[in-house]
Amino acid sequence: MSTAFARTDHSILGRWWWTVDRWTLVALAVLIGVGALLVTAASPSVADRIHVPTFYFVIHQGIMLVPTLILLVGVSLLSPRSIRRLSFVAFAIFFLLTALTLVVGSEIKGATRWIAVGPLSLQPSEFLKPAFAVVSAWLFARQHAARANGQFFPGYFLAILTYGAVVGVLMLQPDFGMTFVCTAIWFAEFFLAGLPIIFVLGLAVLGVVGLVGAYYVFPHIASRVDRFLDPASGDTYQVDRSLEAFIHGGLAGTGPGQGTVKLSLPDAHADFIFAVAGEELGLAATLFIVALFGFIVLRGFSRALKDNDLFVVLAVGGLFTQFGLQALVHMGSSLHLLPAKGMTLPFISYGGSSLLALGLGTGMALALTRVRYPGSDVR
Image 1 (cartoon, one colour):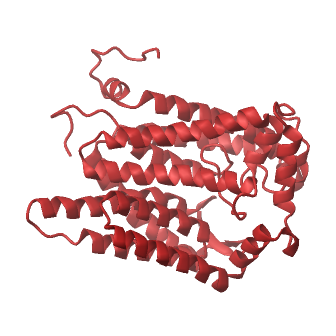
Image 2 (cartoon, helix red, strand yellow):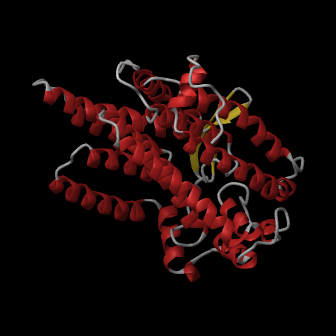
Image 3 (tube, rainbow, N blue to C red):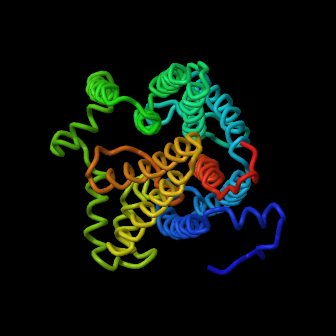
């Protein structure tokens, strides 16, 4: 890989370049490039259907990419201590904004997840996810550190309270998909922190009970599960069109911009953009996209597990769990392997809040996985 800075360059950017994981940067850049291509291919038909300028979504996505990249690189320059501080501030702000959506939020498709910030609409829970991952990691790690020094700190208890507060406000919106992702983050970190096996089994049982309870309490969840298990029980138009797109694309695809199924596929630029990739780029390219996500997640875990700081291991584990699980849910929904759930494909789907939040989360992960030489960083 060519070098952008000399090894003798001791500037902030020079030190960053020689300590950050450049292979993950390359993979993210490719992912962003694929996303720009697919939004350009998928969004014009959506824009025409809702009577806005043809390239409205393309232009908006391009504009939002600028602050996203600035945020990603800027956050990745920070030290672990600064990441901790940033996460606590972000958690406080976006938890309050997420709660505020219940009062002044805009209702879209039966849920109040958006809040107006000037001329823009913001989904605060998108930013709450990465902040929650890092805050929970610190609480778990802090209890371990206190115990090792013969002190007491109720990290596990505070982590449980934090999780309960986040899940509570998300379910009131309601946003079951976001709740599922936050639960997976929290459980993964708790497991890595050394959760006893009896508690692992206990939490697994509680998770099953929660899923069953959600099925009976929330009609929209029951409807999605029923349609997944028995397509004849309800409307499966989106999933049917999605599967048709993959079939039509075959191995090599129809070519960028040449797909036809997207013309009748709702949310083709967002919740079902993977189907557009299947039709226009084909099986080989979609497998390449899957491999990109797999590479980013596995490399992130590999880098984290080499670190001796438990906080870094847990935080990076939580952040990449979120990243990978979000991609998995999107792809699984598009292929009818999971019940349909509106969730963006990281760095590929259209969405301003999603892009900015991903910039924040991946920036944190890159900062925490940077090479840190003895004495080079203040924890």
